Image 1: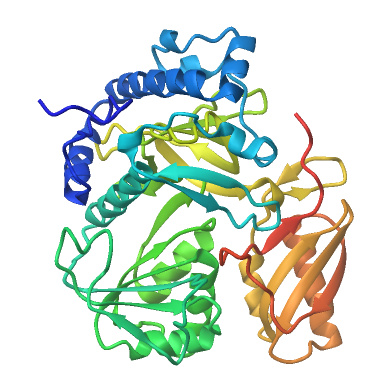
Image 2: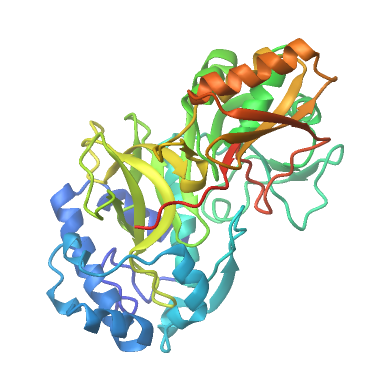
Amino acid sequence: MAESLSGILWPPFKRSVPHRPQAYVEILEQTQWLSPDEIQEKQASQLRRLLKHAHATVPFYRKIMEEAGFNPEKIKQPADLRPLPLLKRGTLQTVGMQLQSTKPPQDHGPAQEHTTSGSVSMPVQVIKQRLMGHLWDAITIREHLWHGRDFSQGLVAIRNLKKSPFSHPHRHLLPNWGSPVNPMIKTGPSTLLSINVPVDQQLAWLQSIPFRYYLATYPSNLHALLVTSQGVNPALPGILGVRTLSETLDDQTRALCHTLWGHAIQDIYSCEEVGYMAIQCPNGPGYHTQDETILVEILDDQDQPTPPGQVGRVVVTPLHGFGMPLIRYEVGDFAEVGNRCPCGRGLGVIRRILGRVRNLVTMPDGSRFWPSGFAKVGKIKAIKQHRTIQTTTQNLEVQLVVHRPLTVEEEVETKELFKSYIGHHFDVLLTYHDTLARSQSGKFEDFISLIPAPIR
């Protein structure tokens, strides 16, 4: 029998198998149907390997484990990981490469450094070996297969293109969907457009594409496309399906896409540091955690697991990150645990993803919640784009991009709308801008609080 890759018990990836997406996908197609208990048992076996490796080759983790009296050999279930402290983003920024293994497995492939954009916070740097990229590729294909996409059709993406000339009116047509799909499956054409192209030009570009296609973009950009399309050609008959990624997807955008374009959105939950965390179930209402590659915990303020129906902080452990283990890494997001999915897959369920700490409103009494309803500001037709910044517990700055100057009456109405959506009589300052920039990663957040999160 072919020997497994170093440190890998589950899924059983073999050293003799070269990088072929199909080999990984075939294994994942089987493991998704295991029972939740079987999946947790397999996760525990892989966790033991990862933790033993971290103890032996990462002095940072050796110290933490010994101080906690933690023995990696005693891991029998994922819950046994809880005595270890959480790895905060600030800690990751501070210790950085101290988390890198002194003896990364050679058969996991060469390492590459990845730097997150940081959005409004400091960026972080992580090291990933090639195996992590292979797993990303396999889950990318899994997501296509789950949603039954016709590979003979086209693929279109509007996203951040850091080093690309692909911007309107230039269209860069590719003969296929590219890696990782094309080496495995013959596909139709694909094309890309920069997220920085104005939305009305994006819409005109989509209408001009001469083939049918699946569209992938960020939720904020999709919402802008939907609103803009209402007065142009809401059907966009070339679209076969819509995928969103990188940002939090709200229910209003889901409903608007279904109403205007006739498509249910298929969302992806991932981050640069750890890869895929969950992808939307093709048959059920929630997201499935990608339990073959990552352990996902949803924790309350006491660092205990939240039951279904309650919201908690997302904490993850990539199961194959031997080059730079990230054990119990708190990514900064909040999510709600879901019940067992009726689709029959044994993978964990996230009912909804709510966003980051910095997207929470802080009320004068210290309570915090996620604001909603901002999309309805579109009723004021002069407003083209907006972003709200909470500067204090009593003050909001609403940044506006407008088609024309607002009248005095419209300014009053705008202020009252934002107060009503948040549910408090904040002091609202309107400021006007030519554009509202996205982060370096292309993300856009319509609400950002500058008030520090309470220290736990």
